[in-house]
Amino acid sequence: MRSTWPPAAWVLYATKGPLCCSAPADLQFRALKAALVAPSSLAIPDPTTPFEVEVDASDTGIGAAFFQDGRPVEFASRSYSGCEANHIDRGLLAAEFACRRWRHYVHGCPFSC
Image (cartoon, rainbow, N blue to C red):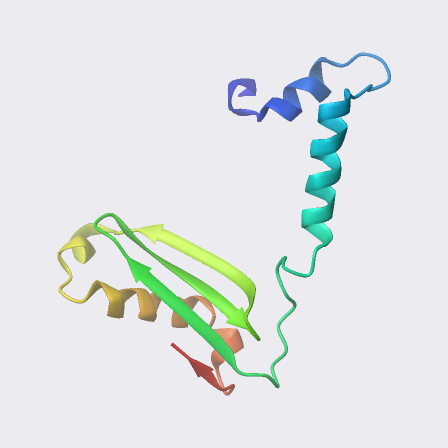
């Protein structure tokens, strides 16, 4: 199980005393912290504002992005199951997936797809 851990987890697991970071590691940590609190991170949905759903389909799966006021709210994707890979209009399949996934947001609210 430990072989699937990211490198940062190995550092924390292997550390027996106080954790000391090098200068490059400290810069990376500060950049990660700034990215997490930046306004470009995921937005909290507001049901009074219209939503936008963007979908895409490939040979192996479908994906969707849920936006509001140009900011991402959530992302979702999955691979095809069974005969879905033979579906003629995969974009329509992706739109159905997105509408089902976020039905609690789009039901009764204005949205575009």
